[in-house]
Amino acid sequence: MKNVLHWNPPENLQGVEVTYTVQYFIYGQKRWLNKPECKNISRTYCDLSDETSDYEHQYYAKVKAIWETNCSKWTETGRFYPFLETQIGPPEIALTTDEKSISIVLTAPDKWKSNPEDCTISMRQIYSNLKYNVSIYNIKSKRMWSQCVTNHTLVLSWLEPKTLYCVQVESFVPGPLRPAQPSQKQCISTLEDPTSALK
Amino acid sequence: EFRFGPCRVEGVALPGLWEAFRTVKDAVQVQDNNTSIRLLRCEVLQNVSDSESCHLVHDLLKFYLNTVFKHYYPKIAESNTQPSFSTLANNFVFIVSKLQSSQAGEMPPDKDRARRRFLLFKRAFKQLEIQAALTKAFGEVDILLTWMGKFYQL
Amino acid sequence: DGGEALPAPQNLSVHSANMKHLLMWSPVVLPRETVYYSVEYQGEYESLYTSHIWIPSKWCSPIEDAECDVSDDITATVPYNLRVRAILGSQTSAWSILEQPFNRNSTILTPPGMEVSRNGFHLVIELEDLGPQFEFLVVYWRRELDTKEHAKVLRRGGIPVHLETMEPGAPYCVKAQAQVKAIGRNSAFSQAECVEVQGEALPL
Image 1 (tube, rainbow over the protein chains, first blue to last red):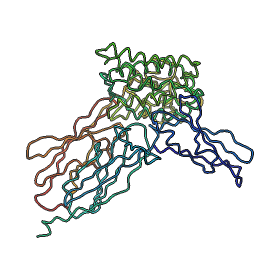
Image 2: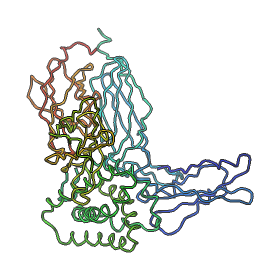
Image 3: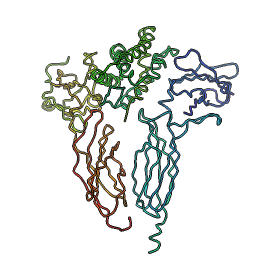
């Protein structure tokens, strides 16, 4: 839910000092609203996450360029629907191991908040049907298998001792297709089996 | 499958409807010049109980079939997005047929509440000029599908 | 609607298996000529609300073969009318319409192909990739002890999926059936396949 408006500078104004002003609009309401932090700015992006945080609403944004004594027409976005269009990041992965098993604990990503003081909302609270695709790689045998899980813990048992396993996880929500954002691969090695050490 | 309270509808692939609407979304929504009006607003769709949901979705989908899709079709024909439109329309036909057959045990209070919600939507629709209303209603199919998705079980 | 000189295609029929729907007809044969065909479809919505409307098939407008894969056109579980006509240069034949509307819920569902393997102590299955509309019910059990069956629903084919962690010294058997939620039907179960983890040996 980090929603940032981006735009390209006007083509025929290289070398000219250009500033931009952004406004946004909530579909179904009456007026365009200003974003003070994005008034007369020189950068070409504007973070509208706070303004578009009610993900059940739909939004428009527009930007105009100002240079010398001129200003351009507004350029407007299409209708933006955060609930459907936001990308869902990968969960946090915590791995613990013993000789023959790996425990995986997954923590759903949090909803973006620009002010750290704001209360934290998990994406699972927004998408109750959030699921995870867990891929497990046995580095020694070079084999992979995957599992689709709904809850946040998973125990892989009867693994091979003293073997490196890597785990990669992707969140997904049934509904419109969204670009996938798999996690980094996280690897851990199962411990040595003490009984085999005694032989 | 969809579970609208007592009404079950199996046989609809919701991702397919999303994909169908995604291909027409921008072309339709850009024609909607009344952005200060939202037909499927919070009072229509928020906090709908399970028992109301079957009546409400039935009324809404029938309205979309009999009024919105039917009279909006000429614009679709011009923009060669007929296949996507056909996917949406035929799946709505299928859902309505399944809802009709499973509306057992109608509870009057739920039906009345659902009816009042639907009339809020219909009144807002009627207040607009017909072509503007058709364009806006069709452009809000993503809002409708999002609400229906809350009753969809994988 | 098209010259009568060119004969219309005959004997239209649909062969549908595993949600792949093939409209077939007898070819129009003219010596030293290549005849093309054009296919159109109409769902229940179109026939109820806009009956004059027919939609060109995604892959067969036009096509040279005497068959057309209409799977991408049939996107709802309602009856569809299908029609085809012949095209030769600027000439077109009359339309031939499929006698009975086609509904995808009549498709033939066959048991899915599957490969059962073991990765160390892990029972792994890879199912045939039959496309996004298919899910699979996989049933597995340990043959020696009780025949208590375990079941898992797999959302897609084409990738190896972990079923169970096996205990050594007993064969594990697996069978699978294809499920298509879009039509609310399942295939028969496949033949069971069994694998075994040998005695106390260390995992490979």
